[in-house]
Image (tube, rainbow, N blue to C red; front, side):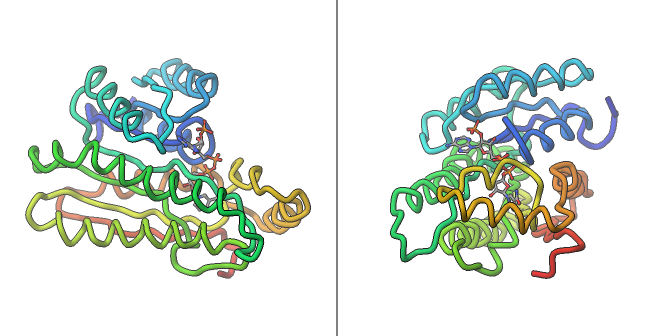
Amino acid sequence: MTSGALAGRVAVVTGASSGIGAAVASALAEAGVSVTLGARREDRLRDEVDAITAAGGRASFRVTDVTRRADVEALVEAAREHHGPVDILVCNAGVMPLSPLAEGRVGDWERMVDVNVKGVLYGIAAVLPEMVERRSGHLVTIGSVAGRRPFPGGTVYSATKFAVRSLVAGLQLELSSTAGIRVTDVQPGVVDTELADHIPDPDRRAEFLSRWEARRALRAEDVAAAVLHAVTAPPHVNVNEILLRPTDQPT
Ligand SMILES: NC(=O)c1ccc[n+]([C@@H]2O[C@H](COP(=O)([O-])OP(=O)(O)OC[C@H]3O[C@@H](n4cnc5c(N)ncnc54)[C@H](OP(=O)(O)O)[C@@H]3O)[C@@H](O)[C@H]2O)c1
């Protein structure tokens, strides 16, 4: 464990049972942060926490569905009880069941709004009053390059990531000068994770995955390094946005 700028800090990471969230939790723990992981799959959370503690880090987990406000509040409360007030919240949980709007998969649209937008809002609501009171804290969202530019079949997903980017911009306006709270929206391009596994149409999923595989995707650890860059910046530096793409990805 390092004894650097983050030693002794407390973080909560949503969607930490796989992919980017798991990599962020592990990187934060490596930097000396006490981390509480939230997601729905208990077995995967337990494995991640075991791996972190085996490496000498401090971590706990709580099964959390971010579409339920009470679950998100309980996740933050569990972090407080185990480790202390939350210094860093990483709102990472997300889903991407892509389909063209004309297919009218309204249930998938609702799920993306519930997880990718309302889940982030519930996280903000759970930590912000205490951060304002302490005049300290860092809110990190995992947005997407899709939050800057829609793509066919990804219109609703993209809209949720535009919303996240807008929330972070608004938080920056409302909070930075008065409360000293930092905000960062990390916007990755293609990352090699399980995210595309839930695209509902099998042919579309296969086509999407083959496009991904043709590129050298980012690894979840590359995104975790971007998060670490933002949260380890000196206190007077507010890294508001980080856009990172694979070198092979033009847009
Ligand atoms: N992969 C990419 O190319 C890419 C690019 C840009 C942005 N992103 C963003 O990165 C974030 C992480 O995705 P990933 O790529 O790492 O994919 P992933 O491996 O599928 O991770 C998604 C995470 O979100 C969690 N999750 C989904 N629904 C949830 C819910 N209702 N409550 C709590 N947790 C929930 C999942 O855990 P459970 O299933 O256990 O709940 C999982 O841990 C997402 O916000 C995604 O939009 C990904």
